[in-house]
Length: 278
Image: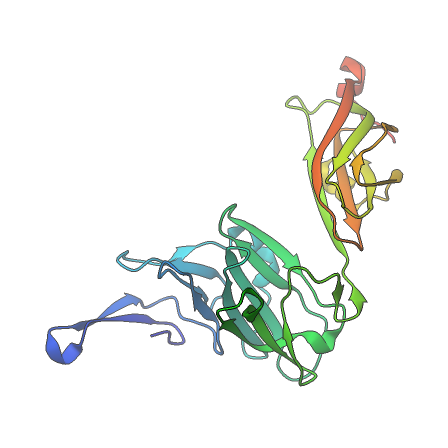
């Protein structure tokens, strides 16, 4: 039982030897369908304090799993947003949808991948597609085993892993690799990169960001950009230097990366002690 600031568990039949136990008198659950279960009986929920927890039956207390995105979810107003959670068996993780309840608005949703303990942010290109309710449709046919979302515009849509568009809108995806640093925080020179993409992969755009710190590199403007295509690509010259380096990969197509080979060079003791440009 998820209350505003309490969680209770009923074990067995209270009228036949069962009991109701207090799990927490500090943590509660957000309203709406802010919880779900995986196939193993583990419970996941969005708390009244905007943390995401996993509760394993038999353990004494829930375990917080949202540390990686704490700064992103702490500002959610649980009184003005619909929090929906559902287990995605296809991708082995929890879908977390955060939708404004009074009007359509841009918002960020999250997916927690159990196999890697990683959080992935996502957003719908059309604000009318944001979910106000979700459910799992579990049929016999593989095409009938889908997650259904009821959207703001009154349509029911399906989360299709094979979809190439978001109901007609191209799906934009990206990933940041980095920060790339040395153990001694030396200045370094990224000389070149070579990528291998899966056969059939769509094109991806690579961008290189450099800076004196990881924060500056992430906030900087790309110094080098280019395109990689399916299979093995030619060597891409870079020759950019910095104390911290990020590589961003982005695409509007379905893509799959197998590996990136990068060649670095040191900048010497003088550059180690001083600031460097790009």
